[in-house]
Image (cartoon, rainbow, N blue to C red; front, side, top):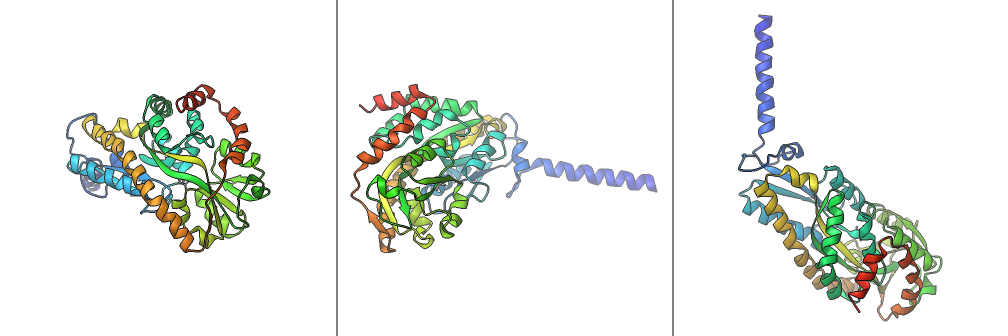
Length: 344
Ligand code: PAF
């Protein structure tokens, strides 16, 4: 009798294991996607998790939704992409680390925190690097951009396409900033990036690097007086409700962002599916950039409508002169020089 029970339990156990490893239905877990094979229709449904730090009406998110729809359509439902906004599965630095470890499949992030894993990218966070948006796009979509993607791949991250978050501007709770001296002593939140930190030190502020997830509370509680981000972020996060009364259009950094995929995920997917995911990921960067351009002016207007004083007429030259000291910090001076020369 005891023998029969043991046999019965073993059979049940085997049936449960077989059911778990076959995947195939909606709502598959990450474990299902880990068991990918190298080609052909294995009947498996691969569920990829895509993460980012912004709201679900930000172009970062809309780009991923477009990619998810196209990928699902082209793979007949064999690849599903679930998109997580608001840092729900990690802030930008954690998401990037997750890709290198193979625990996060897809990410869109500004480049600043990614430089902690791919030092070559630091060149893109130098203030006042690009003459204009068009020059930035031409450089990123050319040879230099390809070299940066190759450097990322060495760290386990596949660059899919270049996106952006707009030009970064300074907001603060204390006073209108018209010239660099007005920044003196302001406590400002900056991204986790050495070049941003050094630039704001050079400008006389007291910068504190922190993830965006901590920044809102820091602004609300007065731990910091200021932050710097594109208008669309200030608008979507209603920074006027977090004491931010002034926004100066410094445009000190063209905030480059990247749609990326973990190399581990890429290798786990069967060849036919991975090609589709990469192709669709390559298309969304340009689309995302167009949406940002369209939304930028609207965001500035919304900020004004909500009482934010916008300081529009700013002479960038004195800011530029002060932060030029951080150009020497860039490890890959060759890359920096090539970017500057390409815009002469
Ligand atoms: O300031 C930041 O950390 C980034 O600009 C943000 C808001 C997360 C978007 O990439």
